[in-house]
Image (cartoon, rainbow over all chains, first blue to last red; front, side, top):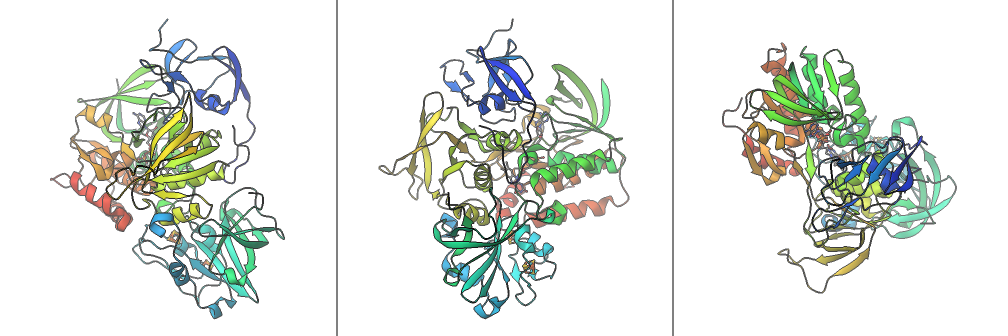
Length: 101
Length: 160
Length: 363
Ligand SMILES: Cc1cc2nc3c(=O)[nH]c(=O)nc-3n(C[C@H](O)[C@H](O)[C@H](O)COP(=O)(O)OP(=O)(O)OC[C@H]3O[C@@H](n4cnc5c(N)ncnc54)[C@H](O)[C@@H]3O)c2cc1C
Ligand code: SF4
Ligand code: SF4
């Protein structure tokens, strides 16, 4: 869910950015990080923990805690809470430690 | 009470009100009950009616005679802890800070709310002021029945 | 390797303030921040600040950030800024290692100010790792920076100023704050913040904590429990609350890791939020020419972070040869401002904490 009206802040309309998440087309807006775009689309489970496969979402949103690791454009362990979203990105839930290709 | 729930006791509230006869003109009611490092109420008052002193942890003291009830301190206080109050005939008239959307419309009826967050009365919106200086804290003038003088604290949309 | 006169790590209020006073002396500064924009915690704070005029009281946090950034921009001939750059290493021979655009860069410095701020603490309870459970800073970032709601029905855990303020901001954004839980018998933050929340109808539940979260893939319920006077859970007081988000605001702890790597002497001081460096009156650590400012030296407030920044910027510049004629006077003024900010009852904890980290050889 996005905020459109706010008593203190302005959220003007921004350019739409398209990306893929686990094979499905989604869109975010300019200025989004990967994680903020996913959350705006209601997706809170980003990946799974390495050993016990527990659901992982973002916790700190400032690139400090590594709870939001995903595979982005085939590169694993990207901190999606601080990585800007860009057009055509391929974002995938990361299962396990990720593979460097 | 205040420590546990955030609601000041009736005695605390009353201690911040001047005598009813002094409220024939609007006066600031400063509900700041703690020594915190803060003083914009004092520095913003154009009439030097609020005294904090050199130690900014002191609680603000109102000089009722100097206060004109202009409401500048109301929108300057970062704690939203100040309103003005005035008694006119059967009405208690307040100027309160408000920071939510939608803003009240003049001449509409909103709910009057007490310090415990409960709806207690109807509140008639008299005036809604927002200047650049207020930096997005709206100053709402509202009138309620005089008997809610010590209970009323804010307004809430009827639809909420 | 490039040599820099003064490197500042972290562009929050402390780092920005330090860059400004240091540049005023003629010193050349390199300011590094890992975020895409400068301003640290301030850029997501929509409320008006406390303090006095010298620390920009009654200005909204995000506008204080703008002011500090524009001050720094007036000295752009002496302050070089790199964003999106993380300082990942601090070595004994006065070298930092910076990761920027997937490349590592090494810089030698004459003096260094570490102003990395603080990170959020977590709370132990069952299923605390479910998505939808966030730190308060994350909620603020999502909502105030990206305009994305963290959820629609939320419970806040922690009644310090951050918990109280973020709850209010959530309501401003249109979120329903179902309750605010506090394990202690009393509200931790300023009562003015608590009162403005209570009058909006938010239940502030003291002596109550979160016992577990429930949900599959995302939190959708929590169980709360009341605590007795010795902080033990009272059986039978469990309650379930439907939520789609939980916000944890149980404090911050200093980001001391670089200091540890560089070998600065650290001490665990709970009053200051965790591991903090031993410092002298000029905020110099036990490593010569390495200074600290802001939350990394003890979790406090933006107002004190700014003043500490001004002070350490001057001190670090003076240390490497840029001493102003009125240096002593300015330092004394900043020290007095800090004293004023900390002199009330809310400053008692900070005062006790700072006593523990004062270096014996006080400058
Ligand atoms: C919800 C909330 C409400 C608050 N309300 C108030 C208030 O009303 N009044 C008040 O005075 N204070 C308030 N504060 C506190 C205030 O925001 C902080 O005390 C202040 O921001 C600390 O400043 P700082 O510069 O030390 O750290 P920060 O603002 O945290 O800045 C640190 C910076 O360092 C960067 N960084 C960290 N590590 C690295 C690295 N390795 N490499 C490069 N860069 C790095 C970070 O990206 C960040 O930008 C509030 C805080 C919060 C979270
Ligand atoms: S209402 Fe006006 S005159 Fe009275 S204390 Fe406030 S600012 Fe001063
Ligand atoms: S500005 Fe508000 S919170 Fe600050 S001291 Fe004055 S009344 Fe208290």
